Length: 296
Image 1: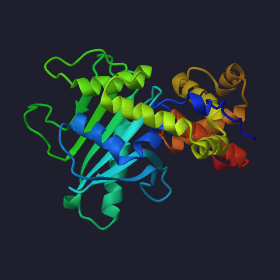
Image 2: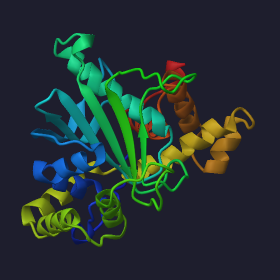
Image 3: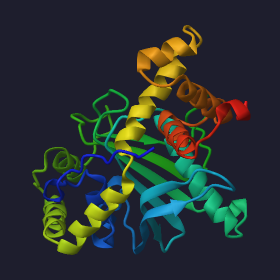
Image 4: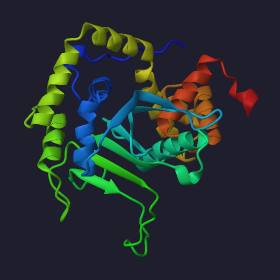
């Protein structure tokens, strides 16, 4: 099966919320360090952007994740900053997966549990995942019966909402954060920091090497449209929940009955995967000529 190539957004139209542009801009410590300091309300002496789109594997035969901007400082703290441009299922579990991946990677290097680094995971979303219209949603581990009791697990998860319009009551965020989120939402820089980000975006747009790299990455990605289509099929199979026979679902979706069987096979084998992960595995199995009847 030949995968369909996605419709590429013209390089000249990329904004800071586009995946490639965000990584290129934030790979520079001088641009990402102010973001961390304004969000975390602390001064950071020195940071090192380990590598953008850092590959992490959580274990043998596991599915890896690719981090947008993975950062370490000189005070035994790690930071992961991610741009999220589309609504995702299992939003909270994505945080959990990134956290687990960071921690396992540290332990694998021979460090004991007590040596786990303090960590911050920041998701910048172009939509409001919680519907409060807040600019920011910070999370930490607290006791359900007495929120004054903290777990002190040295982790914090933060959601920055570019579409935010108000502060949480009693928790006003700074004007610098609001200006940054506004810039990411409408592309109009107002503060010194956002003007610096906008200048970086324009510089990258004019860079021929970056343009060629972007075109190459998109050409090699190749299967985004089909993965999205099959994610819809996976969702339909999940939602059916035994109400209709598989042959009826296949006719309704206009796909082969064997495809439905492969989808069910992957869902059963990996119940914790989201629709996109299942879709990718289904497409890989179909490419390999997988015989689901032999596997059942």
